Image 1 (cartoon, rainbow, N blue to C red):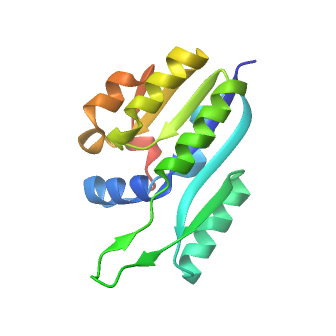
Image 2 (image 1 turned 60 degrees about the vertical axis):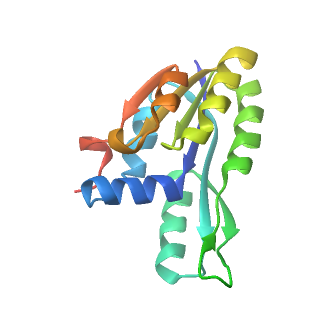
Image 3 (image 1 turned 45 degrees about the vertical axis):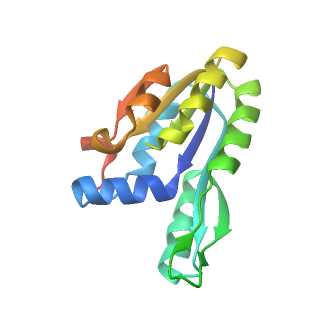
Length: 158
């Protein structure tokens, strides 16, 4: 049985599905599809913590599905801009997972991960499956992936 690691850039998936479809991502269906016939060796959802009750309920749903939820605090800068991304954390975990998994599944459309996808394929010989919203997934990430799966239809909540 192939070993798979599931990594989700929650902020990217939330905003891209909302903007493209005005719907939410179906994490349960994603898990079922990405893990079908495979042994899940890691499943991590990377999110920003604003301390919001609704957000905490969502994080508990992710945990109930089977995800480890990693949180970073939401930082509001004095100029009004905000910061909170997981690019480095996702990269470190993904490279670690690529050493133990045959397949690394990354749910994100962020083009910054194209080099990561290439490194995992070339250095670790891991297959890299990228799930992303078609109009918001960087072409370079799609090209760097072993397989690209568009987020649409059954991967969205009604």
